[in-house]
Image 1 (cartoon, helix red, strand yellow):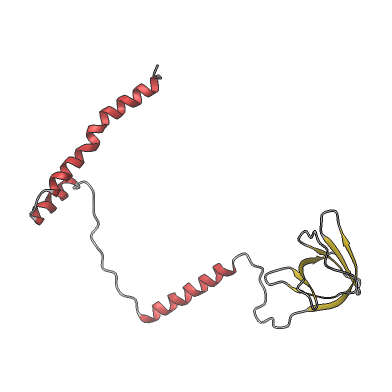
Image 2 (tube, rainbow, N blue to C red; image 1 turned 180 degrees about the vertical axis):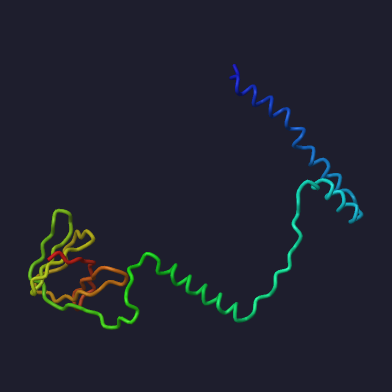
Length: 167
């Protein structure tokens, strides 16, 4: 048994289908006309209710205005590229770097490492590390990361770990 709503939908579909295909028949009649002017007038009569705006003339910009807009676009692209990054001084050439030896390495239950240096600074790894490759007595350098944070690198080896200072 067909629900009551489905009956009404079927009835509406059957009643509207001739109106939907009415414009298609008229458009197919316009396609068959060979004279371009008559064919154009046929299409115009089909779509006479739709308004088409007249093309407007836009004055050309001067070169100086174009250069200014290009600079504005470059500035906007640079702002979009740096969006969300911490603001830093642009002329900061000297990077601070700490070189020291590891005195103690402890692995936490969360698989993060606590590294204690000779100068009593304590650093914790940001990512989880399953295999400990750091050993007491190794010389390390801690520097600023590329975007943010700090990176601990072992001198003479290809070991680098993202860290943050906890003490």
